[in-house]
Length: 430
Image (cartoon, rainbow, N blue to C red; front, side, top):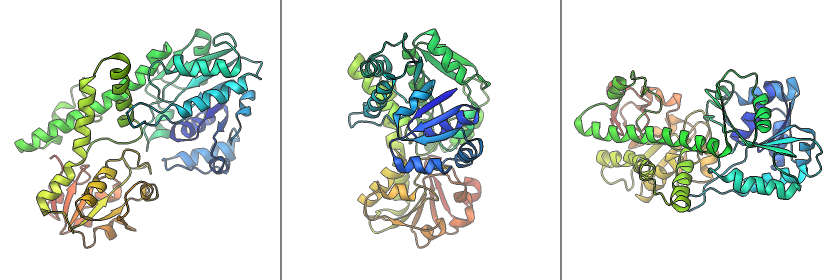
């Protein structure tokens, strides 16, 4: 099939490259012309494991992936995937400006396209958005009728940064929210060579599936952090508790890593959007989801509480912060716990030396002035009064780095039983 992917962020670029590798002819439409040029050289503008190799194979090897800044490219395609960002507004609602731009751009192009075409939203949007926002924009800009002249579907992604390429090719399910059967059949054809259960439902249900999935994963994280805080007061290692519950098939062991909580571009944003929509539009306060966010916000700062227990007043203390990305194997610092940790350290007068193997340039754009960026973990640790492990990069797992230092581990990067023999070790909630 011929497919247009609108947006070359994490979701769009991984989806475009993955679909091209499956044999589709893909054009990635991106307004950033520098990014278009980068992609057309087979170079990834993003830090994502395996993505650059995949891009190179599809752009330079197979030749069935290219990027463009022109919506007119849609005229020669069968399907368009909207993969633009839906960031948070200050009140917690989602910003639909990129969605509106994409729908209007696609609709304007469909006005000149005689053939049937299916528009698929892959961006995360609040249930009802396709019906109330996207379809009216498409019909208004195209002058055509949804269902007759063009199809509509919602196909949520479940990619995890750092392992997004692997997740694309090995999905645990494919959700197709369809306007009508014809629309759904076209989307099913896109994924026909993928071995995964396919769930076909209506569009609004599919939109809710995405939010429900992320809300549940976030709840598991805040739940285990709540349990960890209780266990710590009882002198129990929460990881031993997890080892005792993970064999229950109803529970498992995924997303039960206690620490300083979740970040990233999905979980915090999606929970805020869902609680906002629930409260403002539906009149339901969603107390559990609010509690998940409250626990997560407080959890990030527990690493500073432990630092104060160890050092007392942090004013003038040299604190090494290892890890700025919200998780390892990515340069993404959106909603990263490190941002709030560094901000509070500076507010308390600490002298912050930070290091991350991939995310420092992105961090410099959002962190306050006054942070000293180090060239390596060892350089950040040198002369520090305390070391905070905020992201569990593999290079931070070498306990010999911390000989004689006070270390507060926010991610269980070190084995507590071994680390205690080389440094003054403390876990944030174990």
